[in-house]
Length: 567
View (cartoon, rainbow, N blue to C red):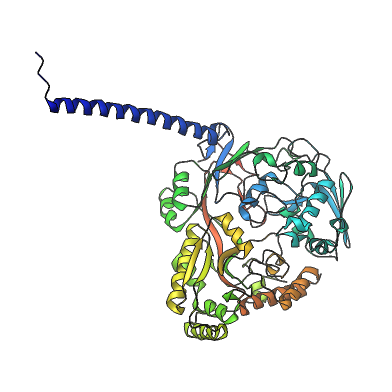
């Protein structure tokens, strides 16, 4: 027998119907969400051929990571190491570095130098990823494009040893006057301003890579902006690029040496520098290699991962803005900042990362002198923290600037864990010791580069890696004509020593110039040395032949292969 419904019964029934409706809506929402997630996963994995395995034996491919999104894949304007890693796999110049770090023939099968004239003979079987031959005209076009003032290439200076290159870049001569000429499709002739001792080493750098004029013009200003906006002549080619998320490289079927690339694909499936993320990805077998921080070492040893160490040859420093309108153009202020800090404390008590060394010079420890290391022949100035003297220099700065107290200084920083530690260390240090307020301007990698180029900073956490195997790759960083001199430091004495290092064939004279540049940078506080970076890292034991290098792509998988049975 049915019981009569009370008002409460009717309310409960209505609530039930409402809950049922909400449940159905929730289920429908979950179904749609799962569909979207699966669709997105398909975009970044299935449709691009990406696997979730760090080492995919079946498909002869690996998953790896990049620390950031590559900011600039246009070889004529690229300046950064992240883009350099990708370019090192997909592009090749006249010369290249092999798996032993030796300079060897690339697109040029042979070359010959006679005084100021160098002739390169290109391989007959060198081709672009669309099947077109790589010609001497491609090199002539790209190099002259770098030197066009409108390109505003920050690396144009590296071509200055070539006849009339500097004048063309300054707009004083047309680029047709530059000493680069394709004699025919397979012969490139380069004329130098004067004989130099290092041109073969710089020609392997990314700014000397070729570009096909017809394809470049078809991209209508978007060359290098997407995977399909480039032609590739290296062992791999980019087949997909999901910006900010992943990119995929596949073996280039037109590369002249088919035996070099043993992997079928390299998936840069993750773009992150977060140590916890990388640890979990490697632990779960989703990436084939990871760099390790101090916090990760305990887990690595517990897991008995194989550990390797690599000193990458890069120096890091706090760069200062020397533009006249900036307070940091004042020498006594810069000296106060320098004297109050201690790079040994920064490295060993703050950063605490394995493989890092305290910064003591603009030249890293590996740079060669005449008969040994540069640092042995020209020892850097010994820096010791001296807070009382730092305060004296600060007072002199205030007097010269007509200020009772400094306004806040802007410290431009990256968004990586190390950059945050470093920025916060300096913020607290200079507040405590000098009473200077530091405002941290944290930016993504690309945004930081843009702000550095615009001079939008008082101080910036920066670094410089070697472009080629010669001390000049560091010595000319603060030359007045170098657009990578982001703080616009100008010193005719330093410029004169750079010119000696550029043009002299006497190694004793060149090394002495390096020593004098090193001293000027310290004495005039052009920058404040922070550290030299190194890595402790682990690699999946099945992946063999990975090259970590100082010159060229820092992490090079183009010689790597998989051993399925490795323990």
